Image (cartoon, rainbow, N blue to C red):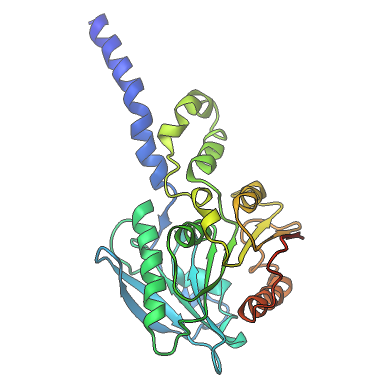
Length: 296
């Protein structure tokens, strides 16, 4: 019996990291199917759209049409919780400024079918971009990829792995640099268990398909990284690390006294005009090509 007990404990200790790894990797996704639209401060005019992902998964999205002649089309990739009906409030001001916006729920979010996985969510981001290119009212020669949090990581990974037609800029707000790194940071915050499992952390949270692996390939497309210096969910150090790995031209805005994704939430009145100015510059090729910039 003692021999069997020892064998059981050894096997359990060997298998535990892999069991926890499946759980930990899935904890990057917190989808729900609740409709937040009735609770928005203001209605967001939109067209419902359905998109097929690369593996056939059916994805639901909103198309926010630009007012007047569109300057460009923004494909917005949202964060890891809730669904597009809550995240649309971060970009509902863009159509009035002359920008089309496409927001698509990843598989398992909102009305989109399936279960989110790292590979699947990235495929859904690519499908959203491809769909936007095909619309008659889009601007296929003037496209902008904009992501927040998980969506920022996906935007960076997608733009680093694919040559996206018409891409004029990539914006990542509050993005993490690597799945494994952010996973290990969260693991260490778990009392006692975090330290016990620390040696197994590379097995528990893998780093595959992380933005820091391919971000250098985004150049020469202009890249803007945004981070709140009080962000406790994704520390600003992740954006700094991404900035150092990226090619030029690149910009890093560190937002003073800002928590996670607050640049276009609580601090919108300051950072929305600044982002529009950035868009104008890159669309008109007025942004400095050879100068890297970090600012607050």
